[in-house]
Image (cartoon, rainbow, N blue to C red; front, side, top):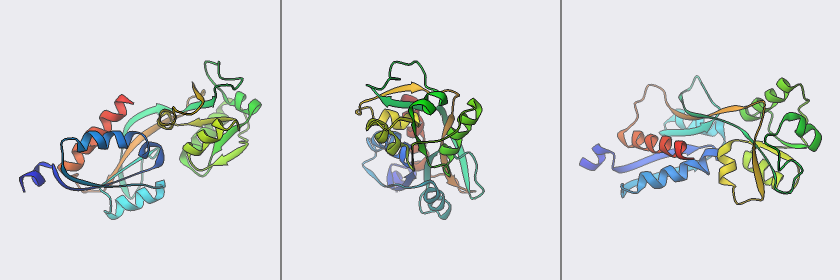
Length: 213
């Protein structure tokens, strides 16, 4: 009972979208569980709409996503903001450039994110700002897929920096993308329901992992 009250025993349900779910959250979980042998975590990685539904229904206490700044069904808090980056193969003509632009994407081709997604819309807005048509060679749902396509030589991928860090084993070089596309790592919780001590402890570890990544 004492451990339950302290948040060092019991169950915690967490759900995330792939960019953070495959990079930052595993690191945060490792640190969180290191001194909590009595805690069982149920963890899932799903699409944004599934994360919102799970948290709204109370099936997961915490959701972690990119680029969702408000929603009528859930509470949203931005934990950190970072700019998206461009990925090209290390043997690509642009691999030595300091930064990559929409003009480069127009010349060499790029892999676009689903235009119905928030990250896809944010990337398109950067092209609009630069006065360049947004005409991806291939359109994909996930940043991870875009990076794999870039690694295969299909063009430039513009992805979040967490995906870029997670896939550092690929033959890709990472470059600033300009005009900058800022994207927030966001915490989703249930409206009008305070976090348990256990959940708050995990949020602290997520923030620490974000700041170290």
